[in-house]
Amino acid sequence: MNEPGAPGPGRHCFAAVDVGASSGRVILATVGAPQPAGGGPGGMHDGGGPGGMHDGAPHDGAAKVALDVVHRFPNGVIDDGVTGDGARVLRWDLPGIFAEVQTGLTKAREAAAARGLRIESIGIDTWAVDYGLVDGAGRLKEPVFSYRDGRTEAAIPVVHAKAAPERLYGVNGLQFLPFTTLYQLAAEPRLDGYEALLIPDLLAFWLTGARRTEETNASTTGLLDARTGNWSQELFEALGFPEALFPELIAPGETYGTLLPAVAERTGLPAGTPVVAVGSHDTASAVAAVPAAPRGDSEGEEVAYISSGTWSLVGVELDAPVLTDASRAANFTNERGVDGTIRYLRNVGGLWLLSESQRQWAAEGRESSLEVLLAAAAALPAGGPQIDVDSEEFIAPGGMPERIHAAAARAGASGGSHPSGGDVLADEPGAVVRCILDSLAAAYARTIAQAALLSGRRPQVVHVVGGGSQNELLCRLTADATGLPVIAGPVEATALGNVLVQARAAGALDGGLAALRAAVRASVELREYVPAAV
Image (cartoon, rainbow, N blue to C red):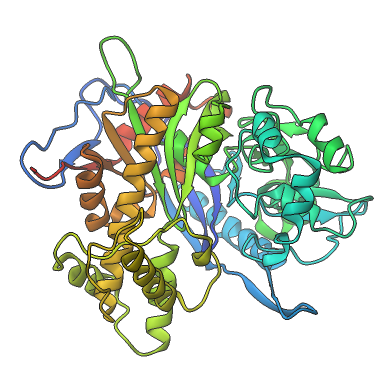
């Protein structure tokens, strides 16, 4: 989405900081006055096959949002050597990320001024679970570990000896993931004298000097009570964590604080510029921007969503957590969303498998262009090899095509729950890409079916948001695998969710999630993919 026209009345300006595991951006956003009935360019484009639909979404009268990415920067894990037992140490360069954020905010301020606008607030979203330990003087104990580091392996049985998985799920409602924050904390040799700041909260602390913990991201730590939305005293005591390990909770729309004088000087922004909490877990912001129509007796549909990027977050939105034994056995998670909603979902493998494969092929001088790879994959017939994209063997970087080949060979030999279709995976990049996408689509379909069974929801449509919504082949395969229409977009769901929460906090928008989603529908073009006829 590009910046429209010259400044006009009723326009508001915000900066969104959106940092993912592989890259970061700073985005300048403008939120315009609500459109008159019949206005707005939002629309639905048919993505394939007969039965494509036109946009019937009720977005008349909704405000419009425009995004302009003013700064991009790379991100990635840093290999910090080896431990005594030979394991690789993987970390993030948070000071480097913060420097890039300040550069981006400087560019955002300049771009806003060129349009005759001023930035009213800043919002930050990042990936979940990772944190920095900060002492009383605000100093980091050490460089921040990445969730891809293997240090939690020994901590998991220690945690489970103190709080069994059944007990943990009954309180926090989270699926088991070996890198969840509570396992990382259990691997720390010392916690006394430190506060744990999750990544967006750490960046907000460096901008404002205020220490807070935003609640959607707090829900990924494994230490938040899924029912109450407060820290679980029971789990802190059981695991021996200091009671004051995390700062107080803050909800999306509340303010961390205003810019420190040094940051204001560095960026040129006024020192009074507020940093507003958004859905700081990037998936929480993305789900807030899923362009679903409201549910009701006569309008709207039950929907499932897929936030597709490095990881795939697949699920439904609920009003209350599902904490049953069946839900735990299916490894579903209950994370908090904007406005007290529950994101009932599973982490499923994502486009990390594709990007890591591309990285290796490029290093080897083989074909790595995404456009060429997808064309080659689309030309292959259905029914080829599949793998279990949820396997932990795909978490670490490096050697991804070889691991995919090995997994496909095992699946084909076993004839197990992820059959290979009876074919051997060819040693061609296009074949590997088709295997990845077929496997992701199959995993999406299984997960949506499980979410429906466990939650009582009956999705009639699947919304794909994030980077994966641009992958036409993946969207088509997902429609075929689920048997449901797939509505793709917005690509920039995370940034839109970030901005819309800021806009509401500033008074530029009114209403709940339905109003925010109406603004999304009024602002972007969507594409529909219908299942192929059987």
